[in-house]
Length: 391
Ligand code: NZQ
Ligand code: ZN
Image 1 (cartoon, protein in one colour):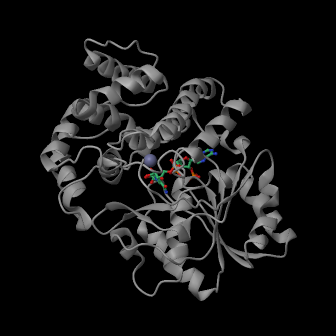
Image 2 (image 1 turned 45 degrees about the horizontal axis):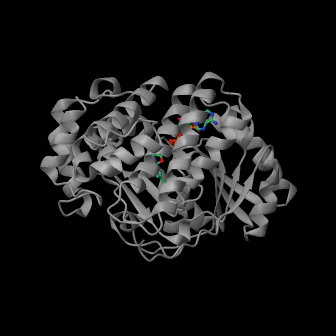
Image 3 (image 1 turned 135 degrees about the horizontal axis):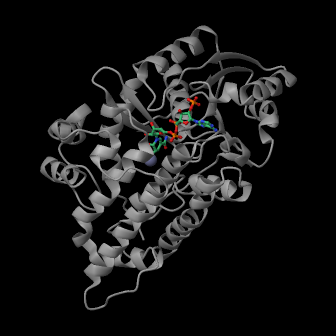
């Protein structure tokens, strides 16, 4: 196991109707004037935004609203939010929605107290200072409610890139599984795929002797395999929603990833797809991950065979562990198909003619130096080959 530090100080409030306590938590974490940030309208329609406003008013907290965050959030609205925070002397950013809204809120919170262009953070500058951020989560997916990360698409060049820093880990996150019940099955499945992907990015490692985090990873994956079909069939199943919601947090606050090298090439490869085609991140990952696995499994056949047995219930073929590894990948594909995810370029709406450009941007765009991935280092030619496996 590698050395590590782990500090994950988000205050989680989990359960039914907990959004009615939002005002109390904003106050507790120092907010007096709030930027209330949300997406394209689901929280207006569900009445969640009104409950949150009432809760703020009950604590005499003033707020300004900024809605309109799009999935795959854009830089334009971030700049607008930063200007608002500065001109209105906002001291707390509250995100009500999914990963896109939370990531946009984090970018605004960091940009508001930084003199330069907030995009510097998305070119590698660590975020060391930000306004406090709180979240009320409405979709189990990105894990942004517990992560120190934010992913934004720069409209100049359509670069989709991530930034990181402990300063943007949310001060508090309210997780009420009931709020996810209005999600259409497709969005639920996209979120689930993203959660599983966050585990895969950590599971495939070159670090030896990481049994405890391997087992955490496997527990999250087994939970998803059990619970996701339940909510796809019955969106109102509270217990399954609750398990998935917490799995989404655990998958990405790095509990499963400390002490080990991680990969993240599949996320880089997917981010090109969601930047170019504006597809849901989880849907993109469903297409990318099996292709990436097929391309790299020979790098460590036994690790792929291990996940196949422990997670996908395969029998180990000791003579030909390669067969076990491939069977595991095939079972992942079948699972993704069973929950309604796309499995190839056509189903995703992606085009072969864009492969070269996407591979170029993934490896060289926005200051990258030609290689992505930690488990297996990939060059542009490899990324092209992986995209081709998705055709
Ligand atoms: O905009 P509204 O109207 O709210 O609709 C959203 C949106 O259309 C809808 N939705 C959310 N909750 C709902 C709901 N509809 C009905 N009922 C509800 N309860 O779902 C759609 C997707 O929302 P979005 O916030 O985009 O989803 P998600 O949480 O999957 O976030 C995706 C973004 O997070 C990034 C992705 O790249 C993508 O941009 N990621 C962020 C990470 C992080 N910050 O740590 C890590 C991830 O790997 C990921 O890259
Ligand atoms: Zn993701």
